[in-house]
Length: 73
Image 1 (cartoon, helix red, strand yellow):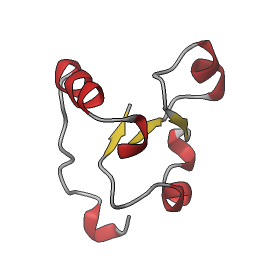
Image 2: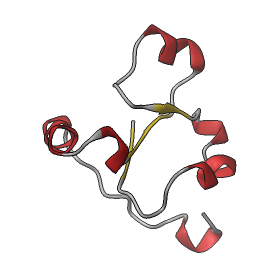
Image 3: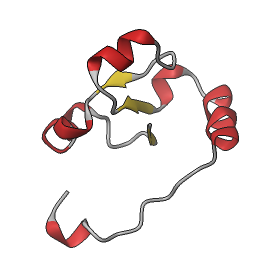
């Protein structure tokens, strides 16, 4: 992300829509990112979710496949 993108609106989806997307695709067909803290993630997370705490997200974007849709929660 660069400064030019900081004010760009990010598309949001209601939980029901996300659920539909996840049910229609296999785990490897999308990036599912949990931006909570490790202790929260350990208590429970969506199947296939990768933990990247929000404070680390910008520096770890390279870990995500840019050709796949990305869902962040």
